[in-house]
Image (tube, rainbow, N blue to C red; front, side, top):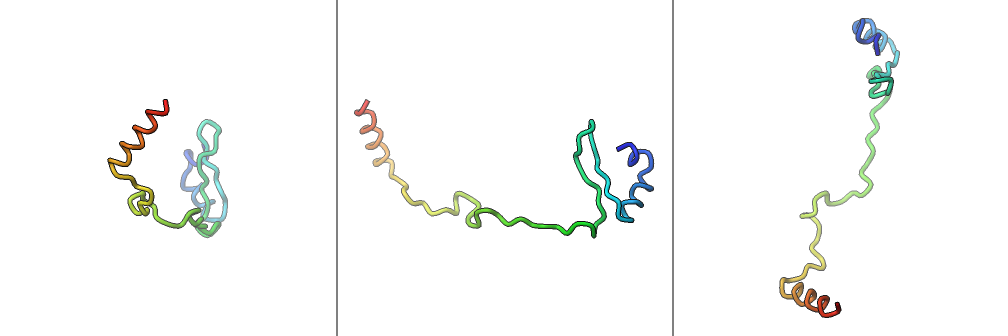
Length: 79
């Protein structure tokens, strides 16, 4: 993006007028410089609306220490 580096004021004036600039690093696009009104912001909703933390989830299937030890003993006897 040599143009932006060489004359940022002119490049920003073009963007303000409606132009879009693609910013590259090593010929790979990394960003777009667009006018504010050019593209509305689209918010994508979460795929799974619900608790976001494991602590908020119900604790179904929790076992006590004794139950876990019994299960491990049973598994060990199967070997």
